[in-house]
Image 1 (cartoon, one colour):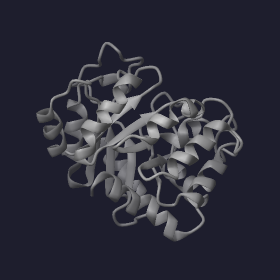
Image 2 (cartoon, helix red, strand yellow):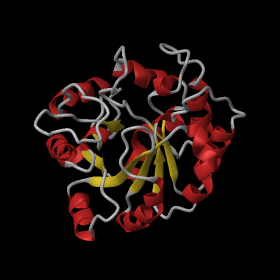
Image 3 (tube, rainbow, N blue to C red):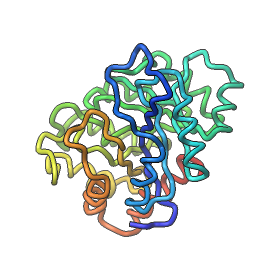
Image 4 (tube, rainbow, N blue to C red):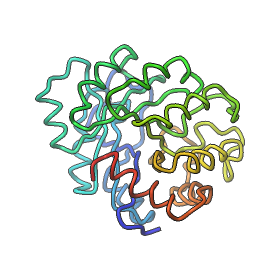
Length: 267
């Protein structure tokens, strides 16, 4: 696509040199930063957000090394313990980290009761809480999430793990959060929620169309490379084309690919 400043807002890097944590739920294939360079060139992008994989737990060394290797166009999302020191947060910030990942599905290591305090800790740095959950559970947490002082980024179209419709309470909750001042969503990984599957993901395509139309300033795009545990492995450029076909205008596409990530991650 070759849009100057376009950002892939969710990739994972796995390197054999870094051991998996005891909490890891699967053994990933190698996915080094050097291999992502080929993906980045194919997409025509110049920026990327390296998200700490669940398999490395609180050990952010692989993610930090990937940010350094990918250079000025890279930022990252870390996983840190609730009692992390201010000096460590500043060290991570200086290394390119711009958020903390809360994975509320198997493999995650941070609990719900750590989220509010962590949000307050990272808000002064301009960081975000990167949240992955089953979108159908959003109504249970909406009030708390709406009050967070930091930015909030919700993964993968909400990652609804059962069929979702425009009338679903989880979708209504998501829209209320996006209507607030500090919530964004990744228009990515439709295979995480779709039952219809590729190539059209017809049962969830309405999510991209609706969100990008109603909340053009709140969407970002991500490849989710290397697509952990997804078989067959999706083609990244086709996933980008799928999402962008569902967005109505070139102006909104530019917002999703360039402007929104720049504001969210501090490029």
